[in-house]
Image 1 (tube, one colour):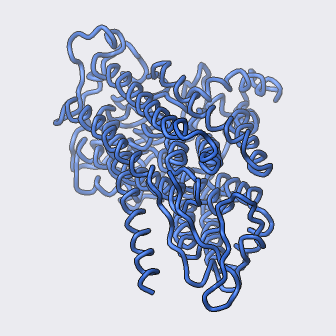
Image 2 (tube, one colour):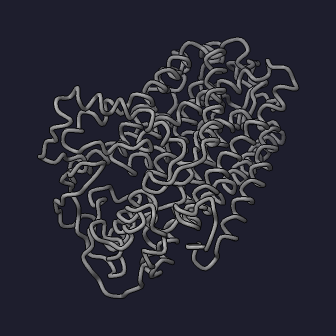
Image 3 (cartoon, one colour):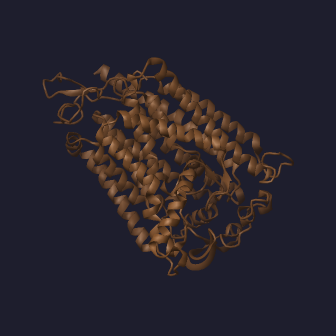
Length: 562
């Protein structure tokens, strides 16, 4: 009994340490982005800020209006919502707010927009996010109730960053803990880091539901991959199911495509798991509770989308995208751009990252994918190939049929919730086979890959910071400082960037040590199958030993060698 208790406490302390380091790493990096990015510069942030201020004041809907807008060279009719919010938010109106000056003209300095004024009066403001579900805005909008002006806007950003960092930290713990012998937690960490592209981290530090959507998807994929490929004890299983339930609730409530992502994540898990593993999981009540939570969240999201007409199409028809073959060709030509945007693009698709960031990211992803394809099992390879195909060609199915009514409004970030499954799955498969490599290679290569991730993130941050600090014309030539983060200046943002790098080093060191999960004295579940019955393969890291009570054999978790 004493040994069992010590094991449980030790596993809990190890998980807490990894979670804390991962959370601190992500939240400092996202906060650096929050400070370094002018308010309303990120995609659709003005609309989401207005929506958040309205929702926390009890206005979930609003007056629907149709306004003509110019998008990607095409004049289209777009549905907007008029809401009543504090008068200071009038500057964030998506139709004529002052923030539009530098977003629509790269030659103008950020200083042209002035600041969002504090006001106790109310006004009618137009937002393009009026039909979105209220979940995200209830979580981040409440600082606007007692903070006025830009202080309230930055506070909303910080709450969004805290939420995203917590989700990503939970994903890190999920892929690292409970490792079988020979499994590399450090390599599994690289999978979560690769999923957290500069675009994803940037979105996490601003007010946009796309950020938590991506972070929740990373966590969901991490849990499902480990559930499908492990033979874990019941305590660890319950912990993972709680994370999966929370991820599904958030994934469903962030954006209209959330239920689709939940379905694809669960479908991927069904394919990854062997029949014996599925039978084992199906006998456990916590599994059905988690699935019930996911189903309820998905149905609630679908009901909101249908009631609010979130995905309603305008009645207009754009001749250049009819027939469907014309739209398919137009979207196909943009597929490389969408992949580029998934890695690193900032502002309103007008602030780029250095090419080195993209090169390093494809090196990270390519290494994990090639290793997984070479060593993975058939089920894992099937899911990995399907995910890559969906990431590359998904816009053909999701955008092309609607292009005749909406124009080409698709952006790469919309598909990140699916794309993050590629590095997460590939890294778990790679980590499982890592011990087969020569010692020097398996020790040094993860360090180089994590270092590449840090360089790519840092380069993207500095590139964008130079754009906002000196303007497009003087981005690399210097000159007079045209904008800096309010109150704290650039020094605080750069200090946070360096601090996140230091915390990443500590995280990499910690994940190089064994992190076994808690085991249960009664096995995975009452009457559960043994590892052999569940379809465990030789070398999968599971051992079966007789129970001290003379009951059925149960699996003992073995620590990894890092």
